[in-house]
Image 1: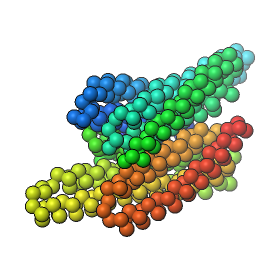
Image 2: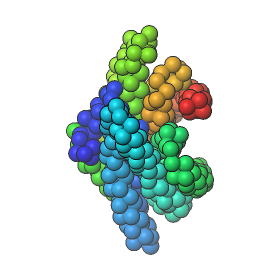
Image 3: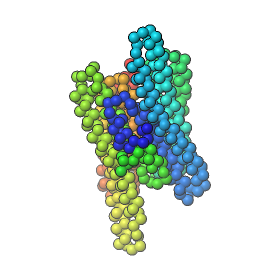
Image 4: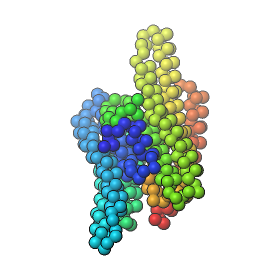
Amino acid sequence: MFKDLTVEEFLQNLGEGSATPGGGTAAAISGAMGASLISMFCRVTAGRKKYAEIKGEMEKIASEVDKWREKLIKLADEDSNSYIEVMNAFKLPKDTEEEKSIRAEKIEVASQRATEVPFETAIVILPILEKVSSLANKGNPNAISDLKVGLELCHTGFIGAISNVEINLPTLNDKEFSREIKEKMMEAQVRAQKAVDEGRESIFNIFEQY
Amino acid sequence: MFKDLTVEEFLQNLGEGSATPGGGTAAAISGAMGASLISMFCRVTAGRKKYAEIKGEMEKIASEVDKWREKLIKLADEDSNSYIEVMNAFKLPKDTEEEKSIRAEKIEVASQRATEVPFETAIVILPILEKVSSLANKGNPNAISDLKVGLELCHTGFIGAISNVEINLPTLNDKEFSREIKEKMMEAQVRAQKAVDEGRESIFNIFEQY
């Protein structure tokens, strides 16, 4: 699992010329790294006497975001695994009509999964993005640059995951499945953009006062 | 060093309530992760017969980007270390006038270094950003989503690093030093925005044809 590699090994693996790990895995790790910084922001706030009133709330959000981070770390692996399944399906024999039909079915199933995984990544990141604006407004301004990097990493994770959905959609035969994912994806994109815009604005205002 | 931690340990460290590692370190790792994906894109292109004509060029760019990645991994550590130095300087005694003066001097020197490190991070990421548009136009379109995530991670690394420069600048006493960094930073921001806009446009066009 990627989480057990050292940071250096992971970055080396990512840079190699093999198809996995690739952008989908990196997007999930980007979201996880953003989640870490957002938890850190909550904890750096909770640890200060000045913020005693919101200590409980900050600790609760930090734990919640930690759980999403763990989910994203799992999705980083699932992304690579699902893509390996697609490549394996393409290698199946296609000499007889029966083989051709089995192969086509396996490719479709694997490709659907390889589309669902980055979609799940995006969906896990979404509620993290939606926490940022309110955190910026009430948390410790001394750590505002950590929150900013956290927001941008989650945003990159979100749009990276969506790109991986987009690149897989045209390869699918099940048009009903594609249509459903596409619809949900567009809803998620609207919500994410709103959260990012509001988060950036709140953070910008804190920087201005700094 | 962060590169020797596992990915999971690194993410845990980042999420804790201590001041380091924080956004500056995450920004450098984001840039490193983006660099890896851009190297991967070059190698996935170089490995295909169809791109035999640009194989040498792609391998050369991949090696160059690998070197910048190594530099970014070092800067991730330096960022945390420089911030620890600032915190240590603040802990120095301030009972006598002499102690006060030594402490103020050490805080200034450490804070300048804590400003220079994220500035260097941004400067290392800049030429990587500037490679993307041309890579998108000539490389293997099957890996375009990897290049896209690479670009976005490098961009997040760049703006994350710049935020860390911005948050440190007002704390410095040496106004000449601040002015110089600010001037160079603004130049770098203009170049980075141009590179990101062009990179996004080229990638968008490849997605449209896909």
